[in-house]
Structures are given as C-alpha cells and as structure tokens.
Length: 258
Image (cartoon, rainbow, N blue to C red; front, side, top):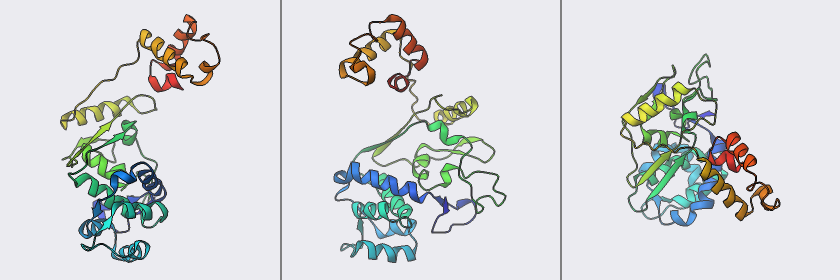
C-alpha cells in the first residue's frame, strides 16, 4: 500500500494498491475492451486522479491526445495494466468516467461485502503514525468509488455509519453478504442496518432445500462436474450421500459445488 500520488493530507488522504490496480485494469481490458471503445476521459477528470508529473509520463506512454485533449478509456487501461506508478490514477479516471456517463448501463457486483468492514490488513505510517489502526477501505482508491456508491463507511473504532451516497448515473451496484468467512455477526448486522437506512433494497437468498439439493446434484451429474462425471449415478442415487452433501455444504450453492 502506498500514499496516493496527489499527496492529499489529513482526513482526505488516500492510499493506493498499485499491483492489485494493475490486475483490475488488465481484467477490465480482457472482459470489456469492446464495450469501452468510444469512451474518453476529459482532462478535467484526469487532473482529479493524476498529478502533473504523472500527466507528462502518461503523455509519453500514450502519445497525442485527441482534439479535445482527452484520452480514450481503452488507452488509459492499457497503460494502467502495465505501469505500476500510473495504474491507480488511470483506474480512478476510468471508473469516474464510467460512473458519470449516461450512454451504457453497467452493473458492479461485490461479493462477501461484510468482509470489507472487518479490521483491515493494510497499514501505513501516514495514516496512523503508531500503525495501530488499519486503513479503512474507503480510503483506498481501488475500493472507494464503490463504497461511496453504497453510502456506508467504517470508522477506526469499528462503527459502521451512513453517509450521502454517490450513485452511478446509469448503472447499479449489487453487493452480497454471507457468513462464509469469520466476520463478527455484529459487523454484518450493523452493515445490514446501515444499508437499509440508506434506502438500498435487501434481498434474502435462502439456503437450498432438500429437494433443491437433489435437483442441483442431478444437474451437476448431467453436466459432468467433478467425480459425478465417472460414478454412473452412484452419488445422486444414494440418499445418504445426498443428505451428507447437503449437511456439509449447509445448502449453500458454492459450497455444494466445491
């Protein structure tokens, strides 16, 4: 974790995860390059995320800007996927542009959202000189735009509270919480309360029933997943085995697949 290049001070100071940001830029390119063609980042937006020194380096990496002085999203992601120093700024400018455009709808999905509100794993002396408090994820540029869109934050004392959300102009965000990880129950409950107060829709996804587990396993066998490909129906025809699989998976889809 590194201090953001714009070197904000005090409570507004931000931090970067350069290597993870490079990976995200690479994945965005691999999955959505065609979707992002035709979009560009204005110089005004770039100045919010990239310092003047970095802008000079960016110009050398990409070359000439277009007639309006803008850079294409695809070009920025290409630089962000290879250049560790420029990656966080390119990523921030791209995400800001996507969240404020009105041409193309898109959805962001964040799983295990309650894990984001446990004590973090990133520490830095510029956030806490005694390095006792971890940097909250809303202070890390990789996560900040999406946490702002939901409108919840975590204080150093662990309190989860609402703040004014910064929604996407033509997009949506879906977050999932579960008890698959060792997150305190009071953290998950406080997060649910904060999200509900913020006006978000909450949908409860129940565990599979006994009948649903049987149907899912039958589906897995037809598809030929794992050992079901070779056991000639021995698993799905064994009622005790099916009950055991439901028990150890807790009726949770991903665990059952695993």
